[in-house]
Length: 210
Image 1 (cartoon, rainbow, N blue to C red):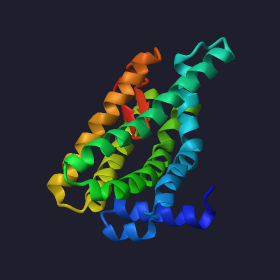
Image 2: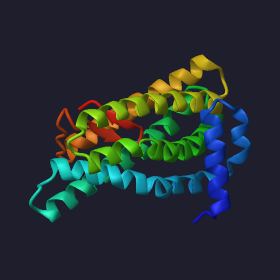
Image 3: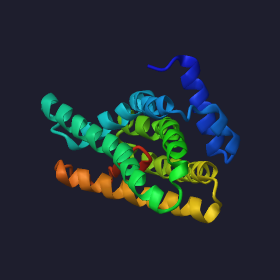
C-alpha cells in the first residue's frame, strides 16, 4: 500500500497533467513498482465509485430484495473495473506497433491516477441521484456537464503524457475512449445488466447514454 504522501504526489502529478502541464510526470513514479502501484488508484477511487454503484443498483436492482441489489452492485463494480483495466491491456498490445511503446508506462500510470480524480469529479451527480431520486433531470444535467469537463481534462492528460503532438495524443484519447465503450457495453451485455435510458450507463469516466 502506498503512503499518504506518495498517493498525494501521484494525484498532484496527474492533476497537473490534466491541466496540460507535462511537468506533472516528474511527480509520478514511472518505475516498475510505480507502474503496479498506480493501480492503487482504484482503491482511491472506490468510495466515489461505490456511491454511484449503490444509486444505480437501487434503481435497476430488485427493490424488495437486498441480495438482488447487492448482486447488481457487484456486477456494476465488475463492469467499471473491467472498463478501467482491459483498455490498458489493449493499449499494451497496440502501443509498440503504433510507435508509442516508450510512453506506455507513462500513460498507464498517469491514466490510473487521473481516473481516480475523474471518479471523484463525478461524485456530485451520483450523490444527487442517490439522495434525490426525484431529481433525475438535474442529475442528468450535472452528469453531462461533469462528463464533458472530465473528457476535456482526460484529453489534456493524454496529450501531455504521450508527448508526441496533439494529433497522436488525440488519436490515443479517441482510441482509448472507444475501447472503454466497447468493454463497458460488452460487459453489461455479458452480465445481463439492462440500464434504462433515464439512468444511463455508468463507467469510471462518467455517464454514457443508455
